[in-house]
Image (tube, rainbow, N blue to C red; front, side):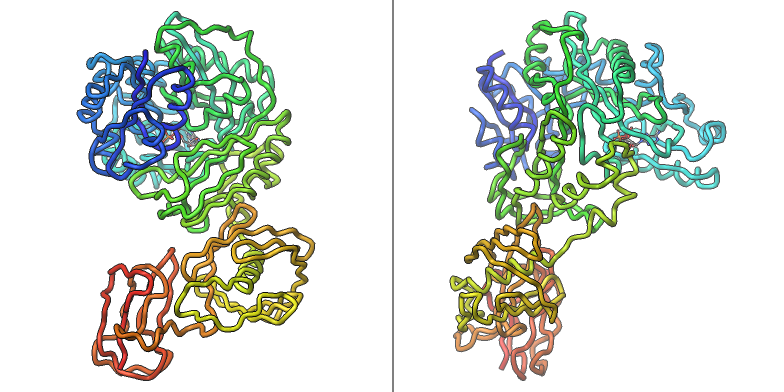
Length: 639
Ligand code: ADP
């Protein structure tokens, strides 16, 4: 093995190449047109374009990948996770092209890829499964009869499922028919396979999974368990190893069950057996026949590099250790940093990372850097941050501290959510279940805006370098000893702040002790709490970052509604920031009064209202609804 093609992108492609390089392998990247300058491409020794941005035409494009294997001379292929990593036909095509497949046999992938087949198989090895129905008879009448036998609540799952798709919790018999139709529809669309299985729905379970590693000589070990019960919408966001509620005896039983399940399909390589656990019992859910996103926590407590072992096993090496050689060392916790808005049902967010700064005292696996774009084409994960400690408390403490030093802006992210989740009492106790995120939702999405406003006020009062033409230099005195008025907005909410030693925000006085402030940072005490904030300017927008969180604050300047440039030949009202025209409230010929709304621009997911600076008549419109406008572009000419 000397040239490894990584059939993936983002953090996992980078992570695999890092180990490949340590082992002295050449690395080949593949990429879509949208990823031409992505980090994984920048890291590789050679790179081949697969096609346009949509995954179906690039990262899922098997003919293009096989061509890349041929063109690159790669003699091994690592699929990462997601994309084609659990696609048996792709594994076969790789082997047919003469390259080594870094993963289990296509047969093992096929069996474990079907939740129905997988359960039937592992039962033969004595692995416990969730009570339910995994039969071939998929008729409505049989499924309904089985549902009544199992009882409610129950769960309908797509046999080909993944990522929570095709899954329905059914509370009662009356709701079963509709839920079945919905699950089948979703499964057909997502997987082109509408077979379903039924499971008893456990109401307060933990998701516990076991990492296993097997060589081609019949040796299989388990690398202990991970607790991945912190999930939002059935997707993991925090994972830890070992599981805080699993004792030595249970660990041994879980490990034995996982090894037996793996052995039942002659498993080779790294894989994960997922269990759902409740009241000291555990049941097989499925096996993922690939590397998992959360593998770093297992690496941290075992000291093993799982990608290294995947490659060694693929090259035919024996595992150099047995189960008895393995002991968990300390505790590790991982969080997944996503581009999303937790407060709006975790809606994915897109945009350019104006800043991406990660702490350097913990492990950070990422595939993006400052200036990179996060698009809708692929998974919105920005990074994984992993901390290891001698105890759980130490690992969690380190991770929280590291997250608080993370600075991301240009899109919405969940770092604040993660910090609060790690600090929640349910999490600290270790007794959290898969209901944790829902039960704590309100507390996990609240954000105190005051420190951000205070930081913005400092920076604005110090900032003489404002380039914005509509905010002419208007005599701010860059010294907190004097009185300075600052007008800010967060979304549609406006704030008037007066700095005079203390800070008065909308009439409420706050004790502020400023240690240092300049045009891009502010360091101060607010009511006894130290706030160190970094501010990234983008036109009138201030991306204020402190404690890991980001709030976009608008600097309204002095003349808060009147974004007007006077005397220019192109004339009229200009865009205060780059964005998209959401609404146009006027047409040519309309008479308007000072203060009337002319149009609304959306930028950074916020609406900005542009008003008439004076009475007049609309002479010309330079923009259209839906159109993009650049900063400073003419919008409307008033006569
Ligand atoms: P997918 O393959 O779509 O990710 P899984 O079978 O892995 O689906 O289940 C995803 C998550 O759904 C689990 O981690 C768990 O939180 C929840 N879940 C699955 N099965 C059950 C069950 N029988 N009872 C309660 N929750 C379940």
